[in-house]
Length: 420
Image (cartoon, rainbow, N blue to C red):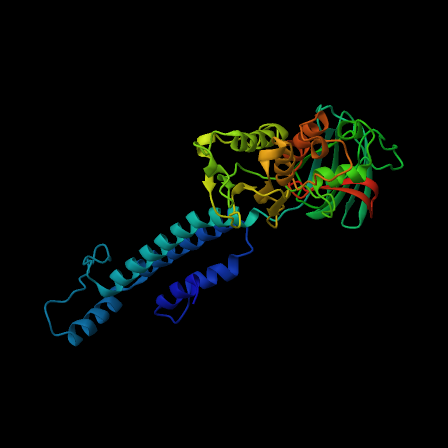
């Protein structure tokens, strides 16, 4: 039973089962607030006038007869209804009929006053439509590294509609009539302009737009990522990982632990396990990680590195290095959001003075492959300018899950962006 029905159930009139709240609600639900106030005022005024007419129109004879019947039927105390012949008005406030009518009118006035207070809030709530209705969408396009705003063609597909635009001063605006899932293609040629061949095009797929959206997307210059004309396939294998479809998988927060695993007890052969040539080479590898990521991952202090003399699965939140008899390897593990949750590498740092240590550790924190054909850290065992650029690109300029696509439904060499 709703709120209105509960009040109606509790309200019983002498003339029947008339429910004032239900009747008012049904009869005047479509009336404007201004008119409804007037109607209620008139109804209250009419009730008061009718009541007064009833008082003045009651003849003395009827009053006397009513008094006689009442006094004869009730055998306790004096008559409760006394009259003044001069004024013809009730004197006793305890008269049952008078008290009932006064109580009723007071109740009606109190109820109508509460109703008038509630109606503006109800009208205001009902007049506000919170359903999304679309609106303008603002897009800005600029250079990944320099931040320069770029004038390039943009193709927008929303709900079966295709818009062709070109940024002016790096900006454009388009309208949507209602919330839509849109695909935005940046730097793809259209009838308004040709693409800028210096930049890799980018696609934002299935972007949920509501209206009043502000989208910032940057595109990268080919020369910045490939200054020496290497094979794009080799670059993607080296810096995004072989067989990973060019997906960017990186750490999104500082690792919780750094652990050196020494199952062959190599470090026990030194008086100080953390101050010797083997451990020094491992520390150089940790510092190379910080250099490669432009400081996004900070190398740990020497005393914060844990040593374990067993080989075990590297736990989540950890970057680990295993001292091996000679085998070199790297691994990493990402969650469903393409965020790295553990990294590991293995080598014998005693005989190669840290070069392999650096290559394997840097590979392990960016899904890379140190067997790429590119002359980079993965073959030269030191951080190069190309490495720094890609490390900055992967860790500071691209979100996890973005991809570089060589051949796909949108053509050759473009990026798929994942902007929240």
